[in-house]
Amino acid sequence: ASAGDEDHVSRMLREEGRNYLLTPATVLNLGILPRTELVIDFVGNLPLRPEVGEGRYQLRDTDVFLKILLLKGVLQDEGAGPSIALEGGPLTPEIYGDKGFGASANLIVSERWNWFIVHLNNEAELSRRDLKLAWSESLITEFRFNETAWPVAEVLWEREISSGDSVYSALAGLIWSVAEGIDLDAA
Image (cartoon, rainbow, N blue to C red; front, side):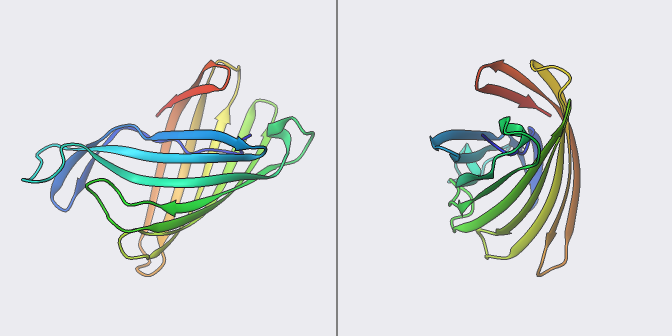
């Protein structure tokens, strides 16, 4: 019953002069009530040269959200029109990372035209470290030529409001429907 989800990739990170290997993001979406999902996210972070006392494996980007389907639409086979969802909740303290809490709210609008699907994400986030506000917009496209595997792409713009710094990114990947209710993605 989702209106749209983000894709994540395994990558290297250089932060404060140190190198990390980020494992693929883990996103668990569990239907808990009609039109409502519990969403738990985290990314494994492996320091390439851990410092003394630092955990060998860290969990970063941890959060616990509720996703509520506000408007059933074409993605739920409810006729024409967009599907609209609201996802939000706390950014939880990381294991061997930022200790504070933050918050996030994301309005997701999705539409489908035959084999072409788009998800527009509009997200406001208060960071864990210092509660600074950031705004991001992303557009995720799916090219669903068949129901077994299909290509996806994402473009993202994010701006930290207080500093005015912006980040732009693009991503391409593939979603594979392994079984009913189980999809794997790589990018």
